[in-house]
Length: 344
Image (tube, rainbow, N blue to C red):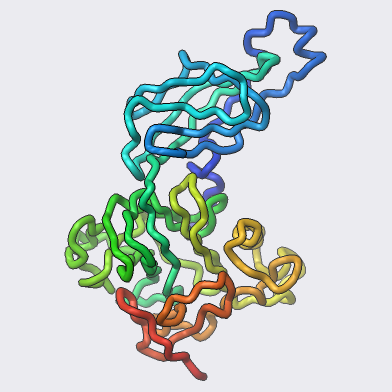
C-alpha cells in the first residue's frame, strides 16, 4: 500500500533551504565565542510591494549584496545597515503571483552566517476577499471531490493559494493564476481530476473547461496530482499567497474527543497540528481553550450530491455554525448556495 507523507512547510512563508555558517568572517574567534556563536534564523520572507521583498530575521543582520541572486533575474538594492527586518528593493516589479527564487547569505554582528534559498511570490495588491463556500468529501466517479470559493469583492486571483491542509502542513495546494474576477463570481477547485484533455484551467473563459462537474459560469481549476479529500477528517485553508495572510479556513470531522486517547481525538498528529494552526491564526473559533473535534463541521450526512456549504449569503463567522449539509441533489457548485438543510 502506498503511503503519502504530508508535505510540511514546503515553499511556505518560511524557507525552502537554510544553511547555517558558524562564524563567517570573524577577525577574533575569542570575541565571537564570548559574544555569540549561533547563526541567525530567517523567520519569514514575503513580497511587501511590487518592488520590495521583506526578510525578517530573529536578530539584526546584514545581507551580503554580492551574494544575493534572484531567478528569474531582477536587479536588487540591499541596505547595509544591520537590522532584523531587511527590505530589499527591486529595480523591476515582480509579476504578481509569479514564483521567484532568492538565494543569498546573511550574517549577524558576530560574523555568524546563514545561507538561504527561498521562494517569493510576486506581490498582488488586488487579491479579492474570498471564502471557502462549499465542498464535498464523499465524491463519486462522476462527482469527484470539489471545493468552491465565493468571490466577495473585485480583484485578481494571482498567487492566492488553496491548501488541502494548512500553510505549514499540507498534502496538496493550488496557487491560482492571474485571472480577473468580480464580486459574485465562484471558483471551483476540482480535487480529483481524471487527467483528460478537457480539464483546462480557465484563464479567460469560464466556459472553457470540460470534465466532471465543470461549470459553464464559474472559474474551473484542476488540482495537479490531486487524489481527493479525506472523507471525514480534514482542514481546508485559503491564503492570499503561499507567503501571505490567511483568508479563510474550515475544519470538518466526524470524530469526538473520545475517539482515541491521543491527539485530543483528532486521529493524527497532522490533523491536530493543522487545527491548532488555524485556531492560532484566528481563522477558526472554538468553544474551549483547546480545539476539539466537536468544534468542527460534522460531514457525516454528506454525499456526492449533498454538499457541505455556507448559506446563500456566504455568512462567515469562522465557526461550525456557518455550515450545513444540503438535501439530496442540493449541491450548487458554481452558483449561489442552497439554504435547504438535509434532515435524516
